[in-house]
Image (cartoon, rainbow, N blue to C red):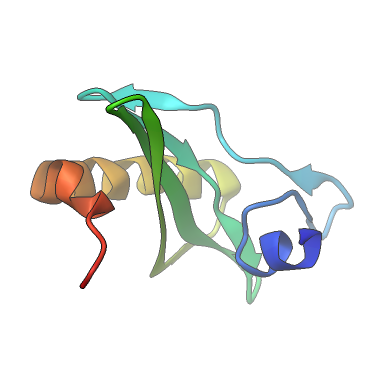
Length: 100
């Protein structure tokens, strides 16, 4: 399972300087919790994260990865938060709907 987490960027990953990159602190936005989880890819940081919300007593999650890459981890966390807010604004709770 940890292999899959690291494959999709949702676990700590070693960086070139030997430290582990950790997901950013959770941020609340319009009742949703955003967790940035950028991961290193081709020498840059890929935009990725998780959007969560409790609905009817059940914790729902939406994981996303975007093509955008940034040079620094901190910039990638900030950009991931921007993308997540955009997803919330566009889809709201519909992001948790499953395709039939």
